[in-house]
Length: 83
Image (tube, rainbow, N blue to C red; front, side, top):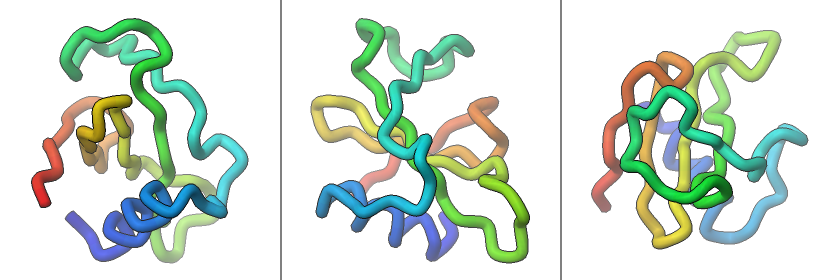
């Protein structure tokens, strides 16, 4: 996990402010890769990609029960973040 993901995790814990307006919006899990939960359970947050001119592909997806997942390929695969 890149160091920028730790920054995103800290922002999630502190409630922001977040660098992108889409941060904190509902992640619908359309891909079905994460455990099945009711819509609205997951929220997505951008992990800044140095040098990128847009949001890039890196995200932290946060579940309502405190679980966190990292993806660097725009939701194709996820790693559970264990701290």
